[in-house]
Image 1 (cartoon, rainbow, N blue to C red):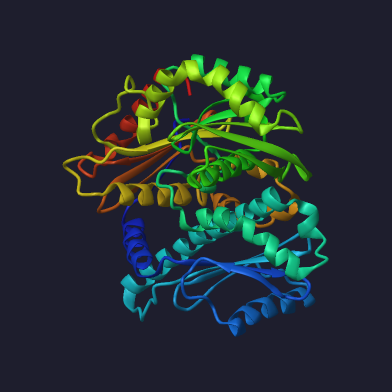
Image 2: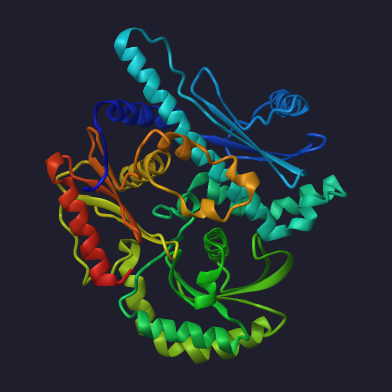
Length: 463
């Protein structure tokens, strides 16, 4: 049999228009953290206007009431289109995500029914995003504080103070302030493909070995340019969150730092040292290590020894910029943006290429690319990390499975046609490709554009 398609035109057009209008009106998300047993607030982050304490208490109370009746309340939708998602971790900490709605209004007739269905589908996609956010926030807290301090709360006031060290990382997840960084959503490592990968790979391996470590990486423009084999063997979410932490530390302006971290899956109770060194503005070398070497020895000895001879190579890597691809890789002019995921290595590379004949801004292209990714994984494509999550987390990921149960096959390709652009998703055994394409391209030609783009990217980069 041929390839499996799932095409969508009219209803997604309405859904995307409503989504854009609503996000512009009120796209804020507020995060609440409470003790699971007593409901004591630990912190709130996100929206500038915080929810009243009475509302926070009600959100906690309705969850506790459901638990007392043997019901797990995980998500609900408000009349105004808002979304509330609950998660309890280690029977100790409750996280609640509240996203604002755009108010809705009355509906009537067939158009109202179609719009209501589109809004329901949009709500499912928003739940995917919020559930992923709560997972990431919990893992951030474990990364910084360790699981023991969170699972066994002995002093609530002390925990409140300690949690402040997580705020910059949590705010980064909430605000999505780094344009083009999608790992928080995909749980794939955001990567940059350098022009001279072999030279940089050799340097990272030697640098990590000299630091008595098997875990090292080179971060360029907030993305992983190269890393040791053991770094790639870390859990995908750990790689993503370590990259986020490195971006946060780099933004502090320090030239180097020694930061204790816990690995949420690999070592949640025993801390490691994360050593970070700025090689050039925008380029950082990092290692995960034990008690040796000291920060001073690594900075004055190892960094100079291994990285000083490669300054020109590093500048060439920095010149790649947000394109994330070497200059030798060319793409079709009708491709506005792409996200390419390697399903085996859990790495991703993405880029936006605004066209002079298309009025979409770069920011809007990134927004549409994320929305199309959520649309695909919540309906058609599989999420590999569900194979290795805990049973508790797996119970919160049934949206895509329930929807896919209505198909007699596993879709391999899907598309969306909207007023702003055309989007195409392609899945193979090794890759997933998500494209934004100029609306002038005929719909029947989208598959050709996607397959050619995937072939060009993989052939030129071996990604």
